[in-house]
Image 1 (cartoon, rainbow, N blue to C red):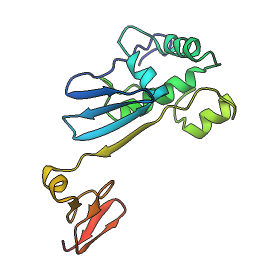
Image 2 (cartoon, rainbow, N blue to C red):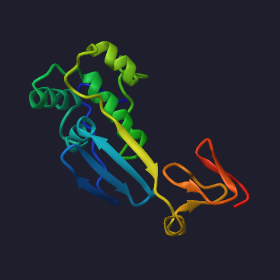
Image 3 (tube, rainbow, N blue to C red):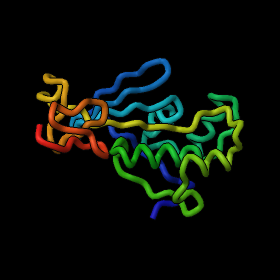
Length: 163
């Protein structure tokens, strides 16, 4: 079990295509065919997951960067999202005081006027080459961000029907 005071997360770098933009960082996972969009806060945390920097030091660096009060809860929320999306070398278990936190809990803990944006990692499954060529998804394929082919309907994120 990791001592959270010495936890040093390490970002995954292999099999990723990374594009830094002014307001966000786009990460394409070549192994899983998933695209991730990290907002500024999530990207800030991810870039500092070098295997040498502790979570408390990452929180301190974010506080210095934003000149706003930052709680380590915010960093653990980002690390949890990054881990769930396979953007860390290994998924870390947060300490009991941070386990099970969600954005609402962090907002409540930090106050509604937090000057730092909550970390967000938005992910989508990249379309298969055939989907990209036709512009539609067929039966059983994801219809998140793409329409279903004629004869199918999008139901709970998956195309159903006879297309």
